[in-house]
Figure 1 (tube, rainbow, N blue to C red):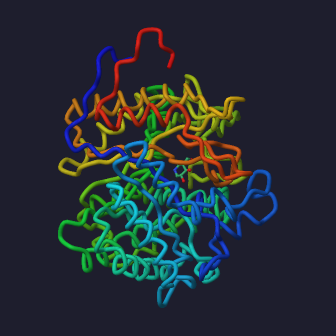
Figure 2: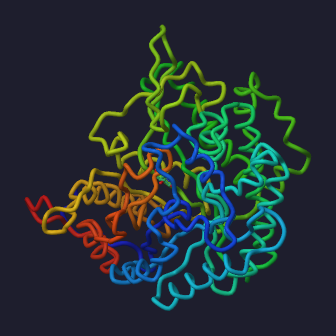
Figure 3: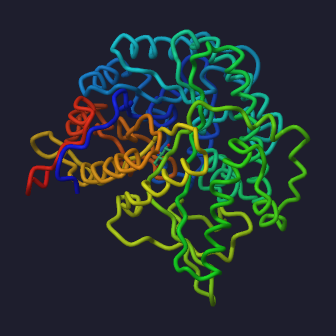
Length: 475
Ligand code: IFM
């Protein structure tokens, strides 16, 4: 724990993040059509308690209040996602004027309050029309995405400078089409790898579409949930298990996006599942577009071993399913890392973030990094005085921001940090049972209550430094 204040570089961006389906609600309003998450969440047994994003935090109607909250908290940047089925309802063809107007109003209000808008184009809400046509395993979906990216760039390019193509394509591909824990709930490892490739292609095509339309100063990126994979022991088997999981968790994306090729070992490891014939000539060149920074999402490390005997451990933190999200890795066990856990059961381990940042910056010198998500769910509640006290979240953030500071000191070119999330929201297959917000949402009344972590974070963002904890304060 720090003993004196830790200052961050001048201009370090302090932000917070959300995603459209998790907060907007208003799923039937204006021209919006269903996304794969509308269909998935309405399918019995898919989401805890049968929760859906129908209302969520009703941000579609509370956005002014939510921006005012951010402004009060001194937030410098807001990362939100655009809902594809809201702005291009059938997933192809013309944009919805009403859909685009919503995001124009949102960005104008942010700019008015001095908050930098950071747009994510895809945070998992594929229009169901496109899933009906085959979804991400279908190549055409990548071209549809580039068309949609162009529509959003045309509408918001005069006011938004920072863009992210995809959020966590690993989840879209491997939870959506491998384990089926996420929408659309399909469970074929070959489809999951096809989806991963078409998401990579979608990214490359979208970057190209954005560059054609946006001014030269635009900052274009992608956000990956890079897994910090550790072997359980130093044995050859465990080390190899870590290499293989690193391949299908990380390098299947960073390879083509940042290095211009799929790693040979990933292709070899997954040969029993697919022959990769869906990769066409010229694809990896298209995917390999120059980026202005890489968005990194980190929550907890991943601990693996090669299975010995018959015992199986599947605590990979990605939800329960009879199908693995990890193609061709049925002989890899996932273990709970030691240490305290959050309400998701994820181990709190800031050293994983430090090590991950050093590795990524070492592997990709010259590529600035941004932490586009980091945060924790806890079982928060409003006390009789109407306050929400969340000392565990403050401790989590303090630990991770200390790790971030150490990484910067060690030479990592890290430009900013976005806390996940602004508001409690729809946590995918966990529904509303998990609260990640620094602002508590009473879903019955839609009342927002900033938690103690929000007030703490406001002090950090205003001072551009992490305060030294008062001795024995316990927050
Ligand atoms: O809520 C999600 C978010 O949508 C993507 N990254 C991880 C968060 C917590 O699970």
